[in-house]
Length: 168
Image (cartoon, rainbow, N blue to C red; front, side, top):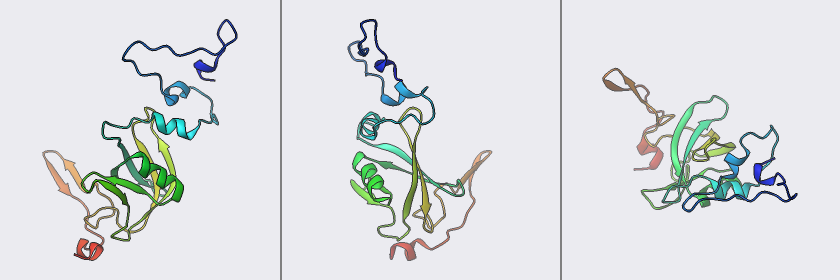
């Protein structure tokens, strides 16, 4: 049970008191020591996520069955809610300034298998089923630069030519 739900000496729930400028404890932090199976209201969890000043949160996409890390992108609340509602992954494109449904121009969609939130509530892990390459370069994942000593080495070939993917 979260501390705030425990009765005080008068039999009432404690009320969180914050000093000026302090942020109240998030629902995630408040419940991190609860037993397996503890359920939290999703709307409150989403409210308490670590959205940055632009209203975005980093989202890491991982292939659900192999564990391969595919890409990192940004989500705003609208993109996250759409993803949860439809099962098709939607991100927020900072360069386009709008929602970006993965695969809308390439056909290389991501279907959400499960979503995880890190302990601090400031990063999302999307376990997805990726159709084809995840990277705009035509590679399976976006992490094809391997750092080795004093250089970065390209260590994978594109699966498909980006011009074929995007019709350029």
